[in-house]
Image (cartoon, rainbow, N blue to C red):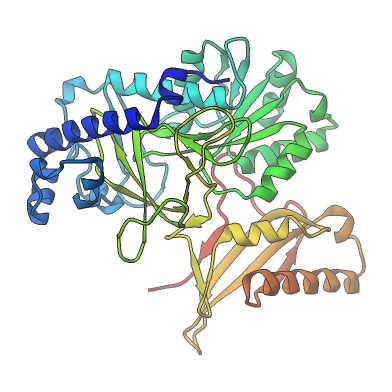
Length: 434
């Protein structure tokens, strides 16, 4: 189902003309209204008049998360504060949060983007959407809520946690689609099994998952456990929240809402743009954002733009599922390792659960980084003899060496011993001191 065919299936050349007009207006507006951007453009020797075509966006300076923290709380505001109707901010527990401020029109655009996202997962006005993302300053809960309301669906705003009640409401209110982090979806399946609930008998047919990295292997596990289709949704607080990009029924990359957000892929080391189809760092410009617009925001997410058109009929460009982030990449004895690579390898190994943590520390003698991988063993395997567990540990080590090119210290831990989360899971514990 396509929520807005006029925008999502628009002729590509017409869309480019529209994007340039929006970009031109945006650059002029932030230059004249946001002192931070005026200073940044002046330092780069750029004036709004220098932007003569869409490709000239590459002349503009980047915006980074540190810029957002340094301008906290209202340093990036592009409208009078009286025009702001809603505030959200990052869910991190340390450091200065990053703020996203919305005007009424910004909320309308966000609702539109999320209605398209839900439609991509097959939802319509007759569906019941159970929203298990956290409500509050985190963008996940309100993003899905705004989108479901725009779609005309029934919303169950349960928020995260209270797992037994989640499962009860799915049964009692005939929930057809639910949304949460992928790690919480796995925990709900685990808890349902403990309670003797057959989740495959529930009316749920689809799930919308995001807010944390998750692999194709985890998608397959969720789909098998729940007997649903699991859809990826992309967004980040800095841009607007969820709904920046989404999967359609073909699950062949995430469609970017290009009339609202302009995507680029750059070489993360040089900052230079790379062609479609080339892996690099994802950068976004908010074309219509009024409250806190962003110019060329470096997301730190690694992906590439898929140049081919999708079979669903949408003409918007797609991004490949994320490979990881430049800031969560680990360098272990000279080898670049993303947690998602470890996750993909683990889900293929019989006898372990897809619950893991990577403990990173620095060797006091060699001054090199070491990583210890804690892996939960399945209930059936944990009761086996010591030699069988050692065989399993050796198998994990061999798989990691084969797929990652390095040996990791492997520690097998008891089932359910790694802390579960109703929000974002914490996969990496960094004990290094700098």
